[in-house]
Amino acid sequence: MNESTREAIHLDDNRVLHADGRVSCVHCSAELGHRDTDYLAQALRRERAPEASGPNIRVKAEVFVDQPMVLRQALCPNAMWCCKPKSCRRAMRFFARPASRRRENELGSIAPSAHGYNDSLATGVNMNSPLPSSRRVWPNAGYSRVPYWLYTDQEIFEREMTRIFRGPSWSFVGFAAELPESGSFKTTSIGNRSVIICRNRDGELRGFVNRCAHRGVKFCRERLGQTSRFTCPYHQWTYDLNGALKGVPFQGGVKGQGGMASDFDPKQHGLQQLRIAEHHGVVFASFDEHTEDFLDYLGEANRYYFERVFDGRDIRILGYTRQLIPGNWKLMFENIKDPYHASLLHVFLVTFGLFRADQESQVKMDPTGRHGLLISRRGSQTASEHTKDIANLRTDFKLRDPRLLDPVKEFKDSATVVMQTLWPNLIIQQQSNTLAMRQIQPRSPQEFELSWTFFGYADDDEAMTLRRLRQANLMSASGLVSGDDSEIIKLAQDGLTAYPDDEALLAMGGHDTQDEDHMVTEAAIRAFYKHYRAVMEI
Image (cartoon, rainbow, N blue to C red):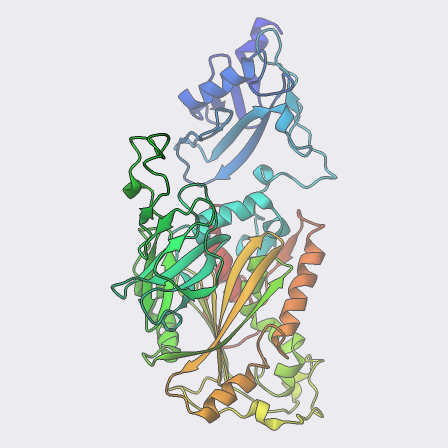
């Protein structure tokens, strides 16, 4: 390589790497960082990469458009730096690492020369392989298009767990009625992390991560229970009902030998705490101590419908079901925010007039788009000119036991169905008189657990309790209606997985995200992705 070539290397159409370690923008000459990217340049010059079986180092580039980035250094020495000059709309993220850790769908390798780097940069990508996450961008059609890689990519999933489920959000974790007295506890999940909610000796609700501070063991395996303390089975580290470390076996050693280091302070090794909010008997938790107050988070319209069901009466838990659905967790939220499908997929809903496009309905969102409401009034089992596209309408179907659809009015308005979605993990279901919480617990990009909690009120008489349980046959893990949704989510995941670089179309009802007085729309899904993109910065 001659000296003139060493002056600057065009990494791609947007970036230039200079011999002094600077990386600048081709378009405006602004520096894309100096000190941190200097380290990158040094890495490119090394005769051999540390911890590598060979001399090659890979470089990936990710384009961020109008996304605020800050310089930061990761823990790994072969790490990541992000930068964005204020004067340029094109910013890049660089990641240097040994070629021994590369993936076949990344950019070509850079082999160091005698001067430390090579000008023969391979910029081609195998077009038969999916683009790596760092090269993918959202379609230009805004919220009306959703790329399929969003449902399959592991890096996206990890980012969701960090930014959404461990970010400034309130996740549903249970009912106060499940924790009736001191020592009552419940284990559940926020995202893919196991957590414990319990009531301490003062009757206060506390929450912490189900992970021992010693060696990371998931120490509590019961879903519900009663205890005076939590003990890790591995080394018997013991915690009180506030999550404070209270016991360490052999802390002082045995016969003057061993023991914990002299600087060990049990007060610094308690369980990771969660912030807890309770409203009218419903319990939420957050990893982020700066999450806004719950009622502000809920918003005015969603508070009305939340308190319509949770009006201060004591809750009675009627039962639980759980199911593992082989699909991405967002498909569940899309399904509940999608009134368009309800008139077409569900034979039971449309046949018996429970939820249909020709009925009086509303779709509402909060200003951010994170929460949503589908509201409808029951119709009749009749066909009309407005139902001609509903192939699954069966006017001749009859119930052998009509008590399955024997609702009574119990709420202050005329809505017979309200499906409320609260970001990031909760569906509040009121279908006639059956009431349930559906808690979404992601496990991987390809599967999530849906945990159902059926409930009524402590002052329900026996007839109402039986009515609620009977109607639960409509919507449950194996419900006459919701069973359709579980199957269609699997089929959606099966269909899109092989096409990560294609995209879904969300154009029913237009392209905006405003409230609607009908259900022939996908506005609530678009609103969801409006907020999703803001949180995820993609």
